[in-house]
Amino acid sequence: MAFRSINLTLLLLAVSSTAAAHHSPFLFFDPTNTVEIEGEITKLRWRNPHVVFQLQVKDASGTTEEWTLETHSVSILRRMNLERDSVNVGDAVKVAGWPSKRGGTELFITNMLMPDGIEIAFDPGAPPRWADEAQGDKSTWMATADDISGGKADGMFHVWSTSLVGGDGNFLFEGYDFPLTEAASEARASYDMYSNPILGTCESKGMPTIMEQPYPMQFAKSHNRIQMHMEEGDIVRVFDMTPGASLAGKEATVLGHSIGRWQDDALIVTTTGSNWPYTDMTGVPNSTNAVYVETFTPSADGKSLNYSLTITDPETFVVPPTFSKQWLWVPDATVEPYDCVPDHVE
Image 1 (cartoon, helix red, strand yellow):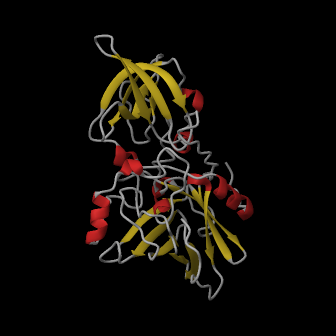
Image 2: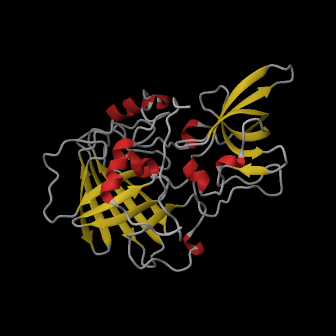
Image 3: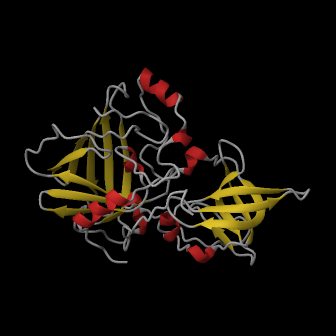
């Protein structure tokens, strides 16, 4: 797969027509508890934002239950060399996964044993459970800087990937620990995660939540602008690099408005005017008065891109918190079309 340049006009058209709804399984499912069930696959939706199976399960008395099995997105599975024909309706399978935190017959599956004895690992960190080895190449998602030979000489202007090594995926708000005001704490406590407007839809996350997205992203230059194209939702953020540019008087949007400047090799981006209502997926509120300052710093060897985000929002935080993560340069990685399909479309 080769590096591809960004056509800003085409990408901005894509943003207006499709978006994303990825969420971390650790928020909605219990990874400390693994459940095994067996049954027949009766329905399969192989698409973003999440691949979903329906499994017909019979208990010892012959009573039938329908289970909903969710796993990672097509965007994640594609990079594990798992394709649509890996599983088919009518297959009798055994699955292992994490139960839903709200109970019921929902499972986030990590492993599946096929009728021919082949095991599939749907989670990049899942070891084989029933066989000596499992299908599902984890190398792209579990890469480290030590695995990369050489680096890119063109600074930050290429594709960057997320590594899932360490923690629950190196997502931006890992741990979800925030210095909240009393009002923000109360809002978060009363928040129902299952009511989030992106769940089951192809609505877009806004700033700053979208910066959690785990898929590859790409930077490109265009006159006095830098575009940041993220695979989730085919989202493009535009940073105005015009000297003396102002953020004043602009209408609020879900991504806000951003101006950038260089500080040596680091790109400093200031964003205001986001009317996306949340900071993260746990219901921490976000106000339109919030100011986000981001720093993107390529490493000297070109293998990694260090990122920090400081949020100043007195309505939400008692002190401005700073969050950080790191992307890797993974050779041959590309930003693929997201092609989200909402739940109500069969």
